[in-house]
Image (cartoon, helix red, strand yellow):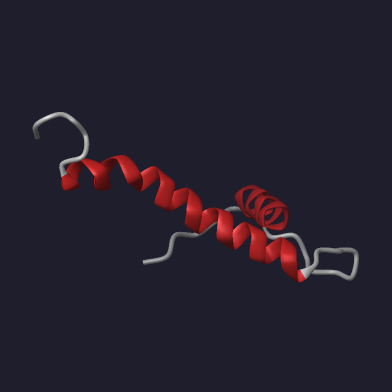
Length: 65
């Protein structure tokens, strides 16, 4: 069931949506390697954060679980 949105809430929602999803224009100058770098750092960062858990499961933590 959809709820009715009043005019003020709709304007606020549109302003937030425009801020969160800016239009794709020719003023964006990113190259392909920017995207590749961000993808690699996201994957590596997630892996590094998982290392303590993985090491503990392997028994390499020095503590008994």
